[in-house]
Image 1: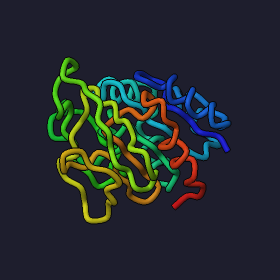
Image 2 (image 1 turned 45 degrees about the vertical axis):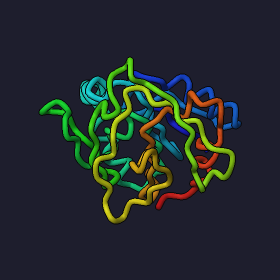
Image 3 (image 1 turned 30 degrees about the vertical axis):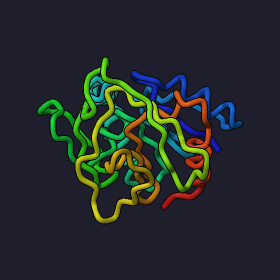
Image 4 (image 1 turned 135 degrees about the vertical axis):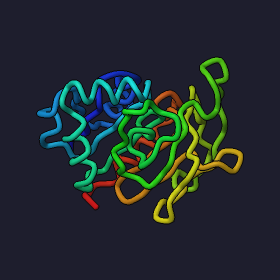
Length: 192
């Protein structure tokens, strides 16, 4: 099995580090041909408008959209959740969403960089202890469709969700010193 990590901008190297610590081979995805033969994909946090713009410039946006529609297991964190969502409330007018999961996001919904924080989350699919969520300019999941399973909430708001093979978090699990979320994602071993 090989997991691709979108490596255009953002925290892709930290995701690779966590995945490799779990024995998972990784490939940095920078061009469309890097998508060939992947068993999973991680779309990291970063700056959502920049990631979208770079994906368009490198010719990745359409192949990414096709791949996520194919049922490939994909984990999107922070900006990755924005890109995988169906609607974005405050992106650039030309910013694309891949429509892989029925969520509506709001960029920087928890505030600017200086308002970043950590929180302890109860995540039943991971079991105890609580998971330390690192929120850096985190988006809000403003709306969650009926087919979306909410896996964790923070102050009543969804922060971890799944629909089919697509899982999104508004926080940065690669910064948590806790590999359980990545382990859970690697457990998704078939296309839905």
